[in-house]
Every structure is written in structure tokens, then in C-alpha cells.
Image 1 (tube, helix red, strand yellow):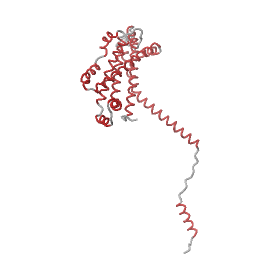
Image 2: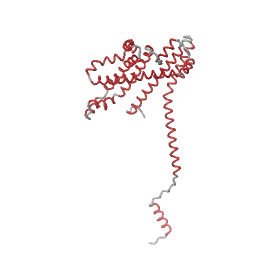
Image 3: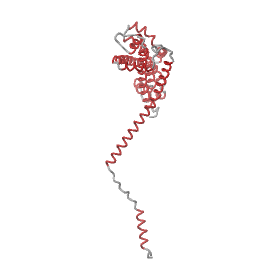
Image 4: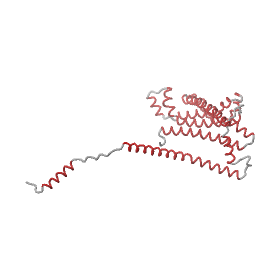
Length: 312
């Protein structure tokens, strides 16, 4: 039958054919230079985002400390204004800050800081070595724990200043007397931290290690010591606190000739009745202790993040 409207049929057939054939996407010209600039912009924006996030974290960590310092200064100044003590006995913050600036610009002061830190780090390193060996041995052998386990705790609770008369008798007025007390003050805390960490290693982990063939030193190196690391770090932190306090007491009591440490300088300021200078050295000791505590907290946070205990 002839088609009455051939032109209409042709139009329909052409439309159907066009619908059956998929449309070819239009080619977009890409400028390599523009793409490179876009990539650089993305990197720059990412860098700014990371910098902003780091700044926020620093501010969140810093503002409580700054607030605490401000409160202390306000209370301190209020006590000075109340005239509870004469100003030459209890100087105000302005006087102490001015004298602290003079202390920090003195080259001899930094020599004293270096001497004190060398003593602290040397004594703490010896305490960590002795405490680790003793803690591992006590946790490994039950008879040894029954013999000296309570003794270690008793040594930890004993005031370090009680050791100085014996230290002076044994080593005279010398560096060894100070190190002796520093080690005795810190080693029990390190040992107890390791013992506690090993005690709380899950029994399931020990059985898995036994199935994997871990024996002797390999078991301690690859399983027990890594598992006890969080408690061990806490013991190290506590051991540092004991060693630092022992060292400050030692420098005040055992004055080695020619060694102008922070404690000796503080003692000299006390002999001269210079309250402002005494407070300056107290602030220095406090700041050093805070900085070391920040280092331990950083190590602890890194360990927690590695174990998935905190958000990244």
C-alpha cells in the first residue's frame, strides 16, 4: 500500500534512527596549564586547612594553661595588695617578672640549668635501666616477687630526703651522693610500672604467643613488653617526677664545690634573703617540670593513637 505522506514517514524514520544511535559526548578542550594551576590551588588550600587545624589544636591545649596562669597572677597580686607580708618578703608579680628577665639573660644561669639537666637525665637513665631489669625479674620469678615485691613498694613511698644522710656518709659531698638518691627515688616507680603492666597482660595473648612458639626472651621482647608499654610509660612518668624532686632536694642539701646548679643558686638567693630571686628559680624548676611532662604526654598520646585508643 503506498504511503500517502512520504515526507512524514521519512521524518519519523530519521527521528528513530537518531534515537537509536547514542549521542557522542562533546569533546571538551583541556588546558594542561589550567589543570596544573588548579592542582596547586588545591594543595595550597589543603595546607591552609592543616595549618588552621593545627592552630586550633594548639589553642585548645594552651588556653586552659594560660587561664590558670592568669588566675595565679591575680590571686598572687591580691595577696600582695592585702599586705599579708612585707613586699621584701613576698614581692609582687611585676618585680619577679623583671628579675626573671635578668636571670634568663645571664649566661651563668644557663650553665646551671645545663648542669641540673645533666644530673637529672643521668640519674633517670640509670633508674630506668635498674628499674626495668628489676621489674622484669620480679615479674618473671614468683619467689623473687614474694621476697622483694613489697620492698619495692616501700622504697617507692619512702621520702627521698631520708637517703641523703646515708648518701653523704657513703660518697661524701660529691655528684655520686646526688645520683645515688636520684636513682633510689626513681627506680622503684619504674619497676612497679613494668610489674603492673606485665601483670595486666591478657592471658589470651600469652596463650597465643605460646601457640606461635614464643619462648624466653622472644616472648618478652615481642609480646609481654609491648603489651605492658602503656603502664610502663606511666611508671616512667612517675619515676621522672620522683627523680626530679630528689634532685632538687639534693642540690639544696649537697652543695658540690664549683657546681653552680639551679639548687645552689636558689640556696644562695635564700642566704641573701632575696625572695624575688628565690621565686624566680621556683618558676624555672616548675617550667622545666611542665615541659618534661608535656614530652611524656606526647609519647603517651602517640602510643594511644597507634593502638587506636584515640581519634586521629
